[in-house]
Length: 315
Ligand SMILES: *[C@@H]1O[C@H](CO)[C@@H](O)[C@H](O)[C@H]1NC(C)=O
Ligand SMILES: *[C@@H]1O[C@H](CO)[C@@H](O)[C@H](O)[C@H]1NC(C)=O
Image 1 (cartoon, rainbow, N blue to C red):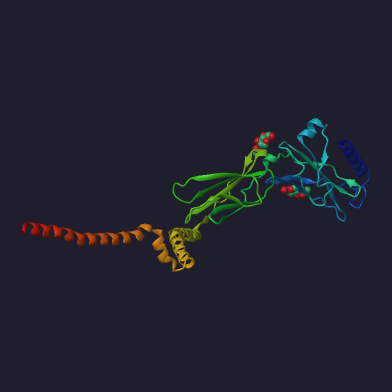
Image 2 (cartoon, protein in one colour; image 1 turned 45 degrees about the vertical axis):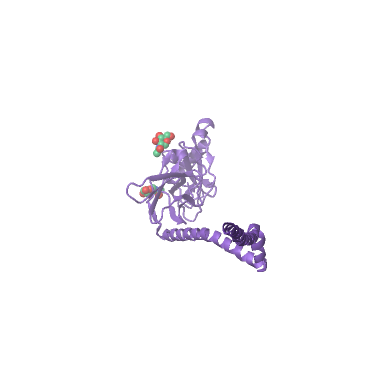
């Protein structure tokens, strides 16, 4: 291809020197794209160049790359870029072509119909470790009494180092590494009435680099005093319930007993349940009888004795 390019250039040079060239000439040379550079941020790489303008003609661009592997082990073969073979605009997303952290050579040429320009190469080669890592965008909020963070999805190569702390003197800073994004991440429980702050930085292990920290975002757990009051209320209610439960069970038992058992049973219960009570009055009666009898007998027995004695003494 290099040889072919050389021959084309030589042919064009010879052709143009011998016969005066004009833009309308079908053999007119297509200028090579100039000012190649890579705009790389957050591991997205965009190769850009100054547009080639040919009045009245449609220009296309072709991009090729050569990584360390291709240049060392594949006889310097150039591989057409995935998305720019060809492309109509003066830029090319080479993110999918750059798959290793090694210097990549990039080149571009312009075509118009069957005519092609010479290749223009990027100087120096591009290494993705030079990408600009921006502080990650994030959204911090509270979910109930939990601190929640949502981070922007920057692709599978990104991890996030998140730190959060309670805004109070001497408060400890907590850290968490978040690997998966796209859904909310719970950082921890928050104490009511406190302010919590969060900041995050992006990490890319493939290039051993990290971004600066994002601006800290804070949330206040002001509205959480109500759930605490509710909890306190619930606790008091539960305690009252615990106290009321045995009382109500006892009351219900009483009611059920009166409902199920007729009033007529009551005397029976009183009589049958305690037989000693039934016998006691009888004994008492007997005792009384006995006592009465003895009381009656005693004087009777005593009297005759006395009488006898008196009688005995008398005569
Ligand atoms: C290349 O960039 C420089 C300045 O950045 C500009 O002056 C020049 O015209 C550009 N070349 C082309 C071919 O556009
Ligand atoms: C990128 O890697 C090269 C070695 O491949 C190293 O020399 C260079 O300092 C690195 N650049 C950054 C910004 O890490």
